Image (tube, rainbow, N blue to C red; front, side, top):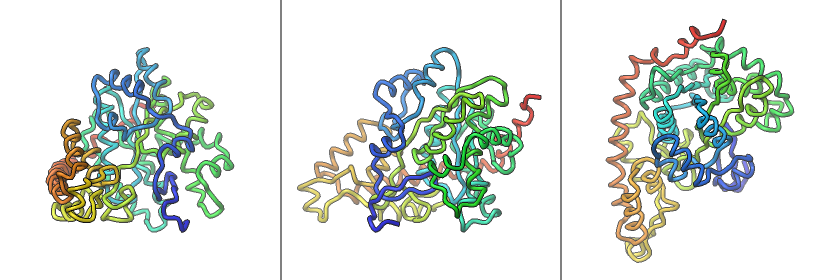
Length: 382
């Protein structure tokens, strides 16, 4: 690791340092979502979503093309995923909530990939059995979001490899090791499972087309750290007879500590779906803020919401009303609201949200089979 703690490193398996999103867009070669494109998506969806309006989802590949196809009457499918390397926190839930909005707005199928092979290959400290246990638990969080069971198919890579392998083989033959090494940074220490893995992550982008025999556009909502996978997937798509998948990419939901995203390596940086109400309150009261050193300075100079983790929680999750958020920001900048008071406002909202989620999570234990991609075996073309 560099001695410079602000060094930006963003890969599908590691994010650290201070993330410069403008630089990342340039580095990855994605496009910013313009106000015009945002309005176009909102119009097609029949309504807006505050995560889009507030630019948590801020970049894309091919979103304009997907909307072109939609305007011509060609529906798209959705694809996103989860790598079961630990418990689920709010930073994971937020993109899934946006994905649910897309599913509801466009009445479309969602293929949700659980990469239990990837995490076994890439996470040195996880046994295969532990990854499977985490996958079981993570799936409960996914179902608790409220996805449509009739149109949502949860793919566990190991268990559903029969649905995936034919496409993975087609992808793998067209991706050279030099390309994989250049895109993903593989070196000679990488096991051959990890080298093969990107061909597996490409599969759900093409699965619906393979099942139905009709080329179908696919839109992938996810965090921008996964973009290298989609660059490779888009490069091979037309070579194997499919449309290039489009993406709508999010920033990372800020963590509760200074200068970073929520991270499973630091439990105090995020709120987990298994946290107790007491622990949630403790984390929020200990959160980093944009406040001044003393109450007197805060009253005179005001706070700095741009760097405040508490304000970020309000902005990206817990205050969807724009006027309410603007008033909170005004009081913060004007010194009218102290950081402790702001935390006291946030804590019960987070506790209530997580209590509702936990209830839905427990109910999901009896519904896992409703979402299993095993149902897709009946749809395979013969």
